Length: 594
Image (cartoon, rainbow, N blue to C red; front, side, top):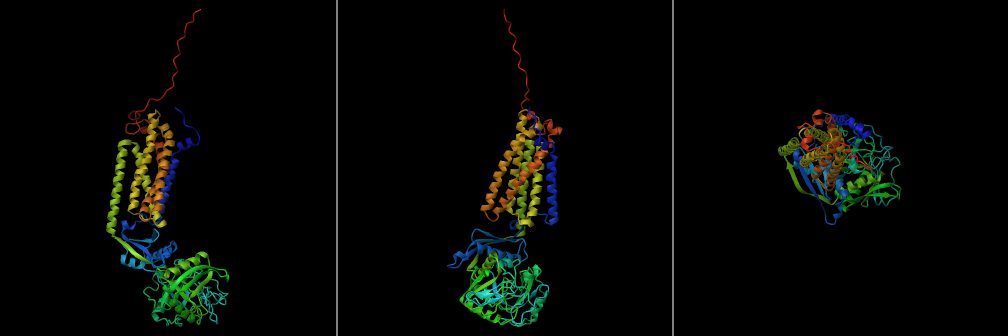
């Protein structure tokens, strides 16, 4: 029998406990992380936990078929996600399906009627005059200049009239119509133009100016704030997400209201806003443009409808006569201020240009959001599925029972066929199950992974894939014993060939799971993701647990002696007697005759 090669392989086989210690440390670390995160169970999808699934199909108006594109669909997803999260459902999922469908999954029995109302309507975009604004928390703000223009740190963006009105977003933005070169941003303007999509999280609005008294006269026809509105403004703490989500709830377009927005420094500001002067549907289109003529850089141009042009000219004419911050108008999307440019003169002509320190990305995002407020793109409700928590629990129980039955059948087969070796296989299955459970529990809060019914099916299929790897290795070891080798050499000689087979098999399974995950959407991705995850874990368990454990067991008398219950009995396997070298018998010497 050939001796094992000395070197790195021999060293690795002599210390299998290193691999076992490594995987044990990994399990302990992951388990500790799971308990530290407070999420000790995998996050369940709506088909298991109960909830509402809404499928929306984008429907363009006549002549606007090109409005259905990836940019606008992504914008719609951002708005819907913000709305659903405003319901207090942090587990909600909003994602596109195909090129014109949006799927909204809201787990845990959220009111389906309320959810449908929130996600099924177009974004509510308004242009409202600013009555008062200050930093959330009552931070001091600079005083307005005597000329009525923003001071060194103006609270609002600036808007001037040119043939393409220019409205600067952020503390330093100015609005002018593009044909007039006389209107230029104030030298004090420094704030970066804020994109609307950024405002959904933290975008910039004008830097706070002096703390305008809520009793100041409202521009644009707004009346002085009443006591109730002043009280709401005084109590408004925009630094709290729960407060921002409910600020201005119930206010109609014709009402004055309070709102929150974020400035270029990432600080939250609160506002008192007058009645809506221009509706988002009055914006015909908005585009991000690189203005090389005036050197303003990236700007956002707006084109208003005929009625919108008149409204915008009226409100900017009134605002231009006011002092800061009442010479500003706030662009309000779903109750949140995403931009508040200031103006110096009436903007007539039906065009406006918002300028500031925009980047290409931020200007495009703002243009997309402005367009979406008036986009000829609506959503048709294709289907609404509500799963009760009880039904979800029943489906989860059925999935667990199916998994338990599959696991029991695999274990019974291993016990019957492999006997003592089944101990190693069962231990490996338990380690794989523990790793799968802990990782799934951690992936919930980390990447939003939700365990749905197809994912449970993927985990059940993985039981067979994992057991198959053990069987490949065990059969290779048995083949070596049939060739007449003792157990310890058989374990080491069988490993290289078994390893290649296991890697090829798992690679094919992982490739299939990856392709399935990429080309499918919705719940089928849960099956593909789980299948891919368990396939990777199968390789980890076989290399770091199954093989080292079998190496240790081969040193035990029970297995090394080939006990009949070990599953490695040479007689039961039909082993050949060991080959022994013998000398050929010498031929008898022939007598030579003289």
